[in-house]
Length: 192
Image (cartoon, rainbow, N blue to C red; front, side, top):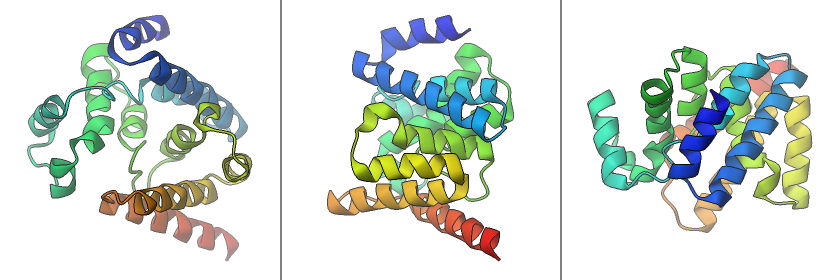
Protein backbone atom coordinates (compact mmCIF):
# COMPACT_ATOMS: atom_id res chain seq x y z
CA UNK A 1 0.00 0.00 0.00
CA UNK A 2 2.92 2.38 0.63
CA UNK A 3 3.65 2.78 -3.09
CA UNK A 4 -0.03 3.43 -3.79
CA UNK A 5 -0.05 6.19 -1.16
CA UNK A 6 3.16 7.71 -2.53
CA UNK A 7 1.75 7.68 -6.07
CA UNK A 8 -1.38 9.42 -4.79
CA UNK A 9 0.73 11.98 -2.90
CA UNK A 10 2.78 12.74 -6.03
CA UNK A 11 -0.47 13.78 -7.70
CA UNK A 12 -1.83 15.79 -4.75
CA UNK A 13 1.06 17.52 -2.93
CA UNK A 14 4.17 19.42 -3.97
CA UNK A 15 7.57 17.75 -4.21
CA UNK A 16 8.69 19.79 -1.18
CA UNK A 17 5.72 18.54 0.83
CA UNK A 18 6.36 14.96 -0.28
CA UNK A 19 9.91 15.19 1.08
CA UNK A 20 8.50 16.46 4.39
CA UNK A 21 6.00 13.58 4.48
CA UNK A 22 8.71 11.00 3.83
CA UNK A 23 10.81 12.61 6.58
CA UNK A 24 7.87 12.35 8.99
CA UNK A 25 7.30 8.71 8.00
CA UNK A 26 10.95 7.82 8.73
CA UNK A 27 11.10 9.74 12.00
CA UNK A 28 7.81 8.13 13.13
CA UNK A 29 9.19 4.68 12.37
CA UNK A 30 12.47 5.35 14.20
CA UNK A 31 10.81 6.92 17.26
CA UNK A 32 8.30 4.07 17.44
CA UNK A 33 11.04 1.44 17.39
CA UNK A 34 12.95 3.35 20.07
CA UNK A 35 9.88 3.77 22.31
CA UNK A 36 8.61 0.22 21.66
CA UNK A 37 5.46 1.23 19.82
CA UNK A 38 4.13 -0.47 16.67
CA UNK A 39 6.50 1.00 14.09
CA UNK A 40 4.36 -0.12 11.13
CA UNK A 41 1.39 1.84 12.44
CA UNK A 42 3.65 4.83 13.14
CA UNK A 43 5.15 4.79 9.65
CA UNK A 44 1.71 4.46 8.05
CA UNK A 45 0.30 7.36 10.08
CA UNK A 46 3.36 9.45 9.24
CA UNK A 47 3.02 8.70 5.54
CA UNK A 48 -0.67 9.67 5.53
CA UNK A 49 -0.65 12.62 7.93
CA UNK A 50 -0.76 15.31 5.22
CA UNK A 51 -2.98 13.68 2.58
CA UNK A 52 -5.30 16.71 2.57
CA UNK A 53 -2.59 19.37 3.05
CA UNK A 54 -3.20 20.98 -0.35
CA UNK A 55 -6.97 20.65 -0.44
CA UNK A 56 -8.67 24.01 -1.00
CA UNK A 57 -10.46 25.55 2.01
CA UNK A 58 -13.97 24.96 0.58
CA UNK A 59 -13.17 21.26 0.09
CA UNK A 60 -11.74 20.96 3.61
CA UNK A 61 -14.86 22.60 5.06
CA UNK A 62 -17.22 20.49 2.96
CA UNK A 63 -15.57 17.18 3.89
CA UNK A 64 -15.26 18.10 7.57
CA UNK A 65 -18.89 19.27 7.82
CA UNK A 66 -20.09 16.07 6.17
CA UNK A 67 -18.10 13.96 8.66
CA UNK A 68 -18.46 15.96 11.88
CA UNK A 69 -21.68 17.97 11.36
CA UNK A 70 -20.33 20.88 13.39
CA UNK A 71 -17.06 22.75 12.95
CA UNK A 72 -15.67 24.96 15.70
CA UNK A 73 -15.40 28.72 14.99
CA UNK A 74 -11.58 28.75 14.87
CA UNK A 75 -11.53 26.08 12.16
CA UNK A 76 -14.37 27.78 10.28
CA UNK A 77 -12.26 30.92 10.01
CA UNK A 78 -9.01 28.93 9.45
CA UNK A 79 -10.05 25.93 7.32
CA UNK A 80 -6.44 24.85 6.85
CA UNK A 81 -6.52 23.58 10.44
CA UNK A 82 -8.97 20.93 9.21
CA UNK A 83 -6.39 19.26 6.96
CA UNK A 84 -5.47 16.79 9.73
CA UNK A 85 -9.08 15.71 10.26
CA UNK A 86 -9.67 15.52 6.52
CA UNK A 87 -6.44 13.57 5.98
CA UNK A 88 -7.85 10.91 8.33
CA UNK A 89 -11.04 10.83 6.24
CA UNK A 90 -8.99 10.37 3.05
CA UNK A 91 -6.91 7.62 4.69
CA UNK A 92 -10.10 5.80 5.63
CA UNK A 93 -12.11 6.37 2.45
CA UNK A 94 -9.37 6.21 -0.19
CA UNK A 95 -6.90 3.77 1.36
CA UNK A 96 -9.28 1.72 3.54
CA UNK A 97 -7.46 2.45 6.79
CA UNK A 98 -9.71 1.25 9.60
CA UNK A 99 -7.25 1.19 12.51
CA UNK A 100 -8.53 3.76 15.01
CA UNK A 101 -5.03 4.38 16.42
CA UNK A 102 -3.66 5.29 12.99
CA UNK A 103 -6.65 7.48 12.13
CA UNK A 104 -6.42 9.26 15.49
CA UNK A 105 -2.68 9.84 15.02
CA UNK A 106 -3.36 11.42 11.62
CA UNK A 107 -6.23 13.49 13.06
CA UNK A 108 -4.11 14.73 16.01
CA UNK A 109 -0.89 15.61 14.19
CA UNK A 110 -1.48 19.37 13.95
CA UNK A 111 -3.27 20.48 17.12
CA UNK A 112 -2.62 17.43 19.26
CA UNK A 113 -5.23 16.32 21.75
CA UNK A 114 -5.21 15.91 25.52
CA UNK A 115 -4.93 12.23 26.46
CA UNK A 116 -3.57 11.28 23.05
CA UNK A 117 -1.85 7.93 22.65
CA UNK A 118 1.90 7.47 22.36
CA UNK A 119 1.38 6.78 18.65
CA UNK A 120 -0.36 10.14 18.25
CA UNK A 121 2.43 11.80 20.26
CA UNK A 122 5.02 10.38 17.87
CA UNK A 123 3.26 11.70 14.75
CA UNK A 124 2.69 15.10 16.41
CA UNK A 125 6.40 15.32 17.29
CA UNK A 126 7.72 14.00 13.97
CA UNK A 127 5.59 16.46 11.99
CA UNK A 128 7.34 19.36 13.74
CA UNK A 129 10.84 17.92 14.11
CA UNK A 130 11.63 15.79 11.05
CA UNK A 131 15.01 16.75 9.54
CA UNK A 132 13.57 18.77 6.61
CA UNK A 133 12.18 21.28 9.14
CA UNK A 134 15.61 22.80 9.69
CA UNK A 135 18.80 22.41 11.63
CA UNK A 136 18.75 25.02 14.37
CA UNK A 137 20.20 24.32 17.83
CA UNK A 138 16.68 24.63 19.28
CA UNK A 139 15.25 22.02 16.90
CA UNK A 140 18.20 19.71 17.54
CA UNK A 141 17.68 19.97 21.30
CA UNK A 142 13.98 19.16 20.81
CA UNK A 143 14.87 16.16 18.62
CA UNK A 144 17.12 14.84 21.35
CA UNK A 145 14.25 15.11 23.85
CA UNK A 146 11.98 13.11 21.50
CA UNK A 147 14.21 10.07 22.14
CA UNK A 148 14.11 10.52 25.92
CA UNK A 149 10.53 11.46 26.83
CA UNK A 150 7.52 11.63 24.49
CA UNK A 151 5.40 13.80 26.76
CA UNK A 152 8.20 16.30 27.41
CA UNK A 153 8.75 16.36 23.65
CA UNK A 154 5.04 17.05 23.02
CA UNK A 155 5.23 19.86 25.59
CA UNK A 156 8.30 21.40 23.92
CA UNK A 157 6.85 20.99 20.44
CA UNK A 158 3.59 22.59 21.56
CA UNK A 159 5.42 25.52 23.12
CA UNK A 160 7.59 25.94 20.01
CA UNK A 161 4.45 26.05 17.83
CA UNK A 162 2.68 28.48 20.16
CA UNK A 163 5.68 30.82 20.12
CA UNK A 164 5.71 30.72 16.31
CA UNK A 165 1.97 31.48 16.13
CA UNK A 166 2.26 34.40 18.56
CA UNK A 167 5.34 35.83 16.84
CA UNK A 168 3.58 35.67 13.45
CA UNK A 169 0.26 37.05 14.74
CA UNK A 170 -1.62 33.83 13.88
CA UNK A 171 -4.80 32.48 15.41
CA UNK A 172 -4.24 29.86 18.11
CA UNK A 173 -6.68 26.98 18.36
CA UNK A 174 -7.63 26.23 21.99
CA UNK A 175 -6.80 22.55 21.46
CA UNK A 176 -3.14 23.47 20.89
CA UNK A 177 -3.05 25.03 24.35
CA UNK A 178 -4.94 22.12 25.92
CA UNK A 179 -2.46 19.69 24.34
CA UNK A 180 0.54 21.59 25.67
CA UNK A 181 -0.99 21.80 29.14
CA UNK A 182 -1.85 18.08 29.12
CA UNK A 183 1.72 17.17 28.13
CA UNK A 184 3.10 19.44 30.88
CA UNK A 185 0.83 17.71 33.40
CA UNK A 186 2.02 14.29 32.20
CA UNK A 187 5.65 15.36 32.65
CA UNK A 188 4.92 16.64 36.17
CA UNK A 189 3.14 13.38 37.04
CA UNK A 190 6.19 11.40 35.89
CA UNK A 191 8.38 13.32 38.34
CA UNK A 192 6.13 12.76 41.36
